[in-house]
Amino acid sequence: MYKRLTKQLSEIEQGATFLRKWGLVGVLIGVGAGLGSLALLWSITFVNHYALGMAVGYTPPMPGGEGGGGHYIYQMARPWLLPCVTGAAGLIGGLIVWKLAPETAGIGTNAAIRAFHNGEKIGFRTSLIKLVTSAITIGGGLTSGREGPVAQIGAATGASIARLLKLPAKERNVALAAGLGAGIAAIFKAPLAGAIIGAEIFYTEDFEVEALVPGLIASVIGYTIVGSVIGFQPIFTPPPESNGFGSPLSLFLYAFLGISCGLLARVMFGIYFRVERFFQRYPLWLATTIGGCCTGLLGLAVPAVLGTGYGWAQFAITGGNMASWEAHPSLLMAAAFAEIVGASLTLGSGNSGGIFGPSVVTGGLFGGIFGVAANHLMPSLAPHPGDFAIVGMVAFFGAAAKAPISTIVMISEMTGGYSLLAPAMFAVVAAFILSGRKTIFPAQVPSRLDSPFHGDEFEPIVLRHIKTSDVMVHLPVFTNKDATVADAMSLMGDYGLAGLPVAAGHKLCGRVTLLAAHRVPEARRREVKVGEIMSGEVHRAFPHEDLFTILKRFAAKDVGHLPVVTPENPDVPIGLITRSGLWSALETVKERRAGKAEPRDMPDPASF
Image (cartoon, rainbow, N blue to C red; front, side, top):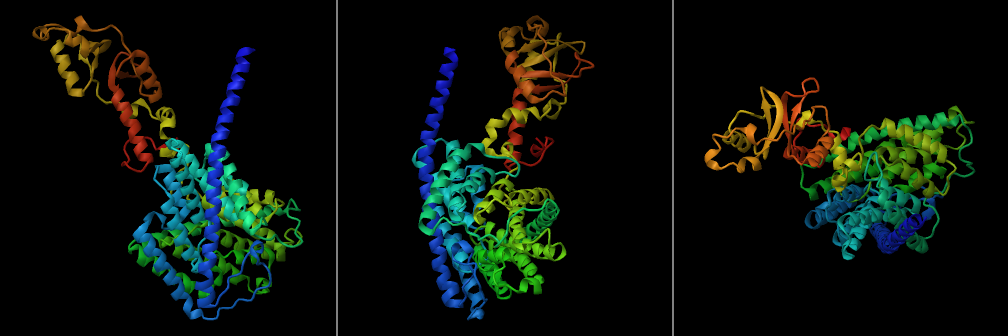
């Protein structure tokens, strides 16, 4: 009873210590991420006012929670200036990135993920440059989202605070993850989703559990700071008169929407990565300029690609005054594909920003068109096309980013309701499966096992998936019982061994060590036989045994090598496995996981 009580008190004390530390760190991270989000929002508005508003004479539509969502008539006073403005934004942003911080190019979320896995330093200076370049990119009309910049800003805030507090390396990474989630929670006013995405976004098939509690604290603080300044209302206004999920049969429609979004995500992967490879042949500043000009030209035909495009996603949800929905659905379908092309031109060329915004717009427009078609064919199952627009947002980004859980919660928070949670889950599962293993964030890894950050924690698991036959010396290295000590020592030197198996008539009968050999006077080493100094102990390894089992045997028997035999002939050596060979195999797998080694005859770590 006393021991149980003592154990419980100890656990309570450890929990209190954890909460005190991460409570303080989480609050500090949340404050930094919240202020960074506000700075980014204001900077985008400032640049947008002068670049698109005053120069081009264009005011992009806004989502309902940011003052838009009403009637809107498309108008651009000086359209001929648009490619010049977007090209200039690409040039200025590209020059800043090229000269000051190349790591801020492209999708900010991907840079934060890469820093998490590889231990790259991501500091305050990086976040400041990312803020400036992203404000120029998004405010200048290029196709980009706000989550990428704020994810990198929040991650840099978390990592910087952890360094100031002198936290260990692993806790610095947890702080980085919490900051990433807090930034997203603040700018999208989605605190729960931000905390979850800060734990989910690093992997395609796993979860960073340690980041969840700090992320919850930081996300709430960041959300509160932004909400207290610009309001706590959700970003998007839900469809009018919609009651959400109402018919079980409509699940088939939502499943088909999910399948379509999964296939559309594959289209985005193909376009984006081809465009990215194309621009890699040019200097960064030139690539961003070309990408900016091309985005502007595309914007002349499809204005939905300009900026974040959230206002157009709002129209997909509520309809606005867009009578062309039913008259010209092909126009909105073209807009969905144009959004993919615009994001590829902007981010693939190296301009700063994020992919979440374009994905939301693409999924929303595509889902809206799907909903209109379903409403025409089966009005009783799809009375509100805007519901399909919301689910399309979830399904498309969940498939592209391989972050289904946080995406479902985020869209629910961004639209102010959970009435579509069930069909969204149905659609996301279908989209996630159909999109394949690719992701829009190349820095993601499948699981914690594949992350260099967790490398040391999973050595036993790695060793359990490598067999003795994969790394043993395929040559029966042993000495004969009747050989001289000098011959045995010479053989040990040739293979760098501290001992050898001993055989009599090609059958194992013991082992001899270098220490025992050195005890023989040098003058007599060519006379004394190995049989006179050997130990009668015989320890074996089998080809089918995993290296973790062999490592435990090395430790238990205090040996550095083992003869390898088959179960059918346990006394006949067919090879040798050494402790150094075991560790060499482990290092090779680690290097392959980090992308630093050429493939060898080793198991693929992705299959573990």
